[in-house]
Amino acid sequence: QVQLVESGGGLVQAGGSLRLSCAASGNILSFYAMGWYRQAPGKQRELVASITSAGSINYADSLKGRFAISRDNAKNTVYLQMNSLKPEDTAVYFCNAVDWGGNENRGQGTQVTVSS
Image (cartoon, rainbow, N blue to C red; front, side, top):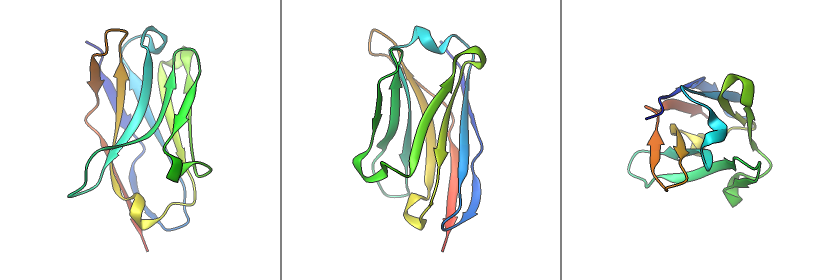
């Protein structure tokens, strides 16, 4: 089972930026897809962005243009660049990896708090 460790969260003012990192213990290209989800208090988990092993990228419609997912295959790390942050972006952000059998691995999450 792959271990996923997120980092880069924190407190930022509205309009600021953060870059989250997700370091995997295994080869990220061995997974069907990796992605970022977020969950705010009292809300359901929602997809932020995902990237397949082939490089196809998907974003939540509401986040297109502000967030960008990327990866460094040599470092087995996936990134989420978040710009123009808004208070409503406040949530715990989780990295996940989905294997070719549809099984999901998830990290422990990193808190992002955007102050107004």
